[in-house]
Amino acid sequence: MSTYQSPDDLVYTKQLFQAASKEAAAFLNLKATMERKDGVIPEKYRELISIAVALTTQCAYCIDAHVQKAVKAGATKEELAETVFIASALRAGAAVSHGFMAMRLFEEQTK
Image (cartoon, rainbow, N blue to C red; front, side, top):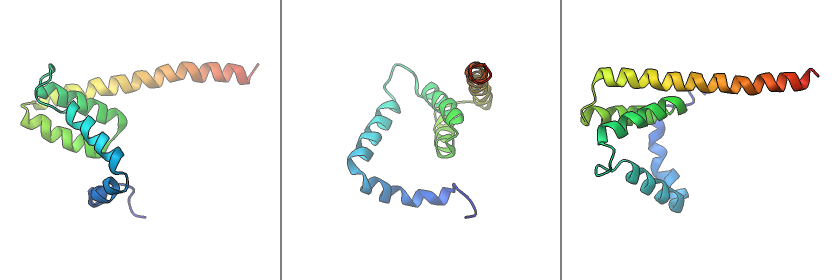
């Protein structure tokens, strides 16, 4: 296998959604609800939030889709850059907080 993830994998969308049609419909409904334009949070900020989440979950497809939508919603390069660093700080913070657990587990193993 040359790669684990490729944009070419998107050809399997229809096959995946047909194989679990009820689950796919629920997912698509949730996605549409979260990406609506009439929410209290403006579209641009919804997209920047989506990018931050996609960066922390490391979903390449999501990053691609939401960067495109953010640009269309008027996001600037500077807003995107700040979003990247906000997400990276939170991801780093999570690693530190999990470090607390690692320290506890170490102590439990060395008693």
